[in-house]
Length: 392
Image 1 (cartoon, rainbow, N blue to C red):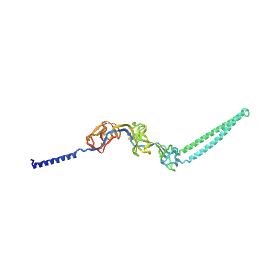
Image 2: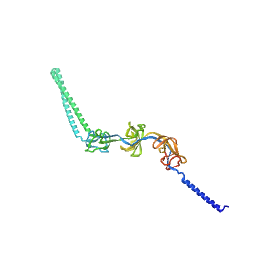
Image 3: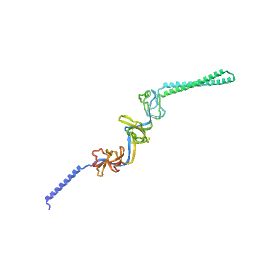
Image 4: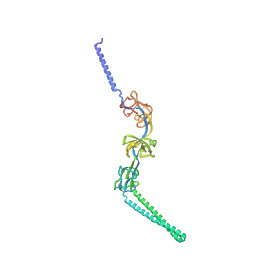
């Protein structure tokens, strides 16, 4: 039979053992390795593209745009349009004061009319003299007049004919003088060379308009734009220029429409390198929209980016490019939740996705939050609040 003292000691020992077990369990709980929250992406299949993009912002340009000024300077007498107006080809835009030239044209026209009347007079006399010369020739044959009389009639007819031709030449000269005065008037007027929109006007009625002399840039009087044909001009790094060919597909993104991308094609690659700055050498390319109407009303001068698509692989095994470490390595989540560093062989790559040729299979999970402190092989991880996202 157990004594009361022994039973008390046993109970106390059991209590001590329980407390000790609780202390050990608490210590383990506090000091255990806690899973690190990371962003995980599931390896999947999808499209991977090799692309290149412009180094600086591109610009929406018009296929037809001209900055017009009159050939001669003068005071603006007629300003037939205002900024924003739609004009047709041949429509009057600006007319300078040219009353003196109009007076010269009127004078030339009157001289032309006078010359024409002289033609009628001189050529009528020439025709009559020719008839008289023929009549005198017939009379000489019959013996009614002398040879000298016939010769005098022929000489008079030839002189009258020469006078007729001289007056005709005067008419031609007068017509050329009229044309010259009209050309002079044309130096003081501007007509639209094509249908378009007036973007900017420099000058008002009564102000003096001055064309640009050689070597001295002056603002144009009229900036005319044809908005029916637009394209994007963008600078590409000289290193990428050999990869770009006319006809390649592009994606055009406009700052005015940040959530949209418009399909297009490379229209032209500049045959020279532009050195805007010593450290920046670029080649300009031009890209057109496949469906211009999809972009709606575009404004010339919009900022734009052009992404040239070089190669496309469909249904490729891919991972986010943000999951790659230096040297083509990724951190893969094992079945026990720890990270494993794995070397992979990559194919096509862009800023969003990288093609995996060897080293990963669809369904595995990789870490994309590599910037977080402590993320490395062997660490126990758990998906953060974003969960595991798929690359599909």
